[in-house]
Image (spheres, rainbow, N blue to C red):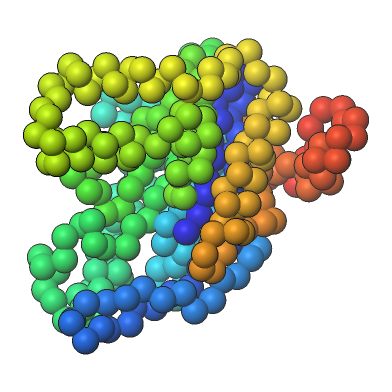
Length: 314
């Protein structure tokens, strides 16, 4: 598992991720079911990848969560291969939408093809079932967060799109998470710790409570009543002014959210499938930068820093 955090601010898009890579296997049970077993957790894995290094104007990046590998190869190696298919030309707008959407759509189609060719046949063989006998919600999932800047006339617009392979119900995606003047933070992968912190409650608990009263007490709640309950609980959400947040503070915000999930994973039962070191990158109109680890450490210790540090230009 992974935690990926993406924060869209007026001055740039911040991507952050943990670096744990979990290797597992499925163990057959006597009842015919399979039990997933973690056999190894590596740290130091890359889950954020710059794209389009040859592109002079548009800059893009992908962050991944979920599956750590396809056919014994890391997702990082597959993203490099996908990036090479973009070429040196400018990504084109697609379906009347932005070039960022165009990259996300290409990523969904490309990785869906690899998934169908490599993952599904192996899964059917492992479970001794035809593919149609394995519903999407029981298939291992690969998630991608595609962020970038699109040149629209004299304006460069930051956007964030989400891709899920396989898709579980609804539209196949990609789905837009952030766009023009839509500032805020999104999190993917191991989401409950951040959800409970930011929203002040777990949406899944609300659904469980409504279901409890319906099934155990016969209390029917109309759609309007359910909406009113969620509206009341929505008052517990932290109202963070992302539209006015400086980029440096956004970096600290992303780091703090990564820390929340990692610390929960450290004390929860079972293998620590979400761990340090974290990786944080900034995507602006000028390009892609990795954030220097020493900058994060100085901020963590409360020492004065000026600007945000970068250690590699791509």
